[in-house]
Length: 360
Image (cartoon, rainbow, N blue to C red; front, top):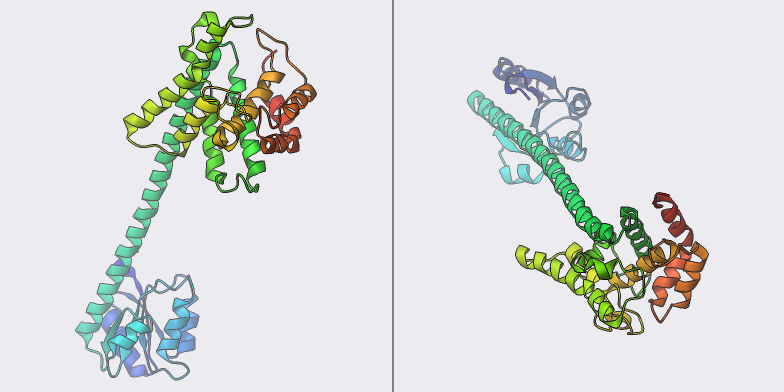
């Protein structure tokens, strides 16, 4: 807004007062005149609207305070400053009624010009600050989005490194993160899970899921890629991938000096996704709710995808066979409520498997 071209509305019943104030302000501003409250409100609906109102308190049809209340109640005019004209100045009442300032009547020219100029400049500065704040918020959103995209890319690169060593495709990572998110959404209203499974938590689970096997980068190829059954000694080495994955993420937390929901889920999933609900899993033999919620969801998602996927040591099972095997593992290998959630969203699992299927 250009201060010199600002529009000032003067509202006063007396023609002599209107002529006087118009003469005081017309050289510097574009002046509009109204002799009643209703006329003033009509002017305020015109575009462009006045940038400031000089308003007499004593009007013939309604008080200046009533006019001010109506202006402040509309989002289109609420931010326009109102300077009250009062025969007996009462600043406390004027401010209480929504005014920005008070000028005593009879009007002194220098005072009126100074008050109008001050509040127009203040209004102009406020608008500039608002625009700068909006611009800053937009810049922050762009930077945040860029950082989030960079983080997602780094997570994907690290996770893919572990998967490609085992000759699995990156599509496996896409599938398991979508399976986990589908389970999370289904369990949001479940009494055992609702407290933790907010929309933000499910988003963090989605990002963390691809890191479940990151510890496999430390497993020797002779064991990781062996097509035959592992010996007890080899299986002991293989089981360490959960520890290696957890330790890698703990190291990140230590270097940062803090953790967050994403890092916590990534650590829990990497370390505990091989635990079994009945306590027969590894690395700690945790059972039931002692297994982190994130790992219980990941266990179902990971096993389902392993069953329907071809591996060097096994053919791919059908969806129906995989579902039945997981159902049979309910309460033993898997959390029964997570299995029930999977059975409920079975068609979504099938759609995810189809959408992110491996190349022939």
